[in-house]
Length: 121
Image 1 (cartoon, rainbow, N blue to C red):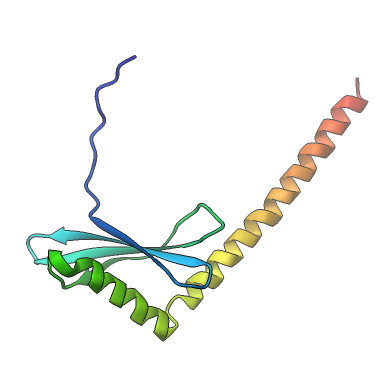
Image 2 (image 1 turned 90 degrees about the horizontal axis):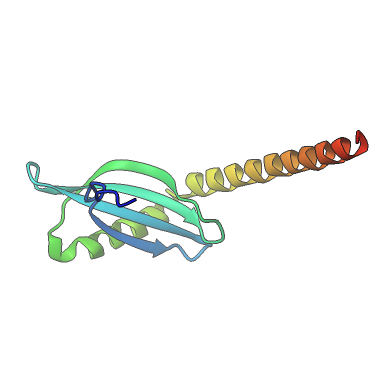
């Protein structure tokens, strides 16, 4: 089946910054013509997990197109120096730990359920 191409939305300029602690911050900045600035979303992810968590959205960044990447990198670095990401790193680690524990419980239940089905044959 040949489906017509699905529409897309331009999300903006994207960069990622390695925080040098096992985490990466991803910034997506989209130009707002009316306000003449970038609206930016920030995500965090741990390098060994393929998942991004939204940190904050709609942060206004004043920059020109030619220096938006450097401006975002400076913003992220300054926030790292302030300890801004500590909460989000802890939250990410906590969420991952909860997922892993829950996943272990579900796998154990599935194994026990499978053994029970075989014993009833």
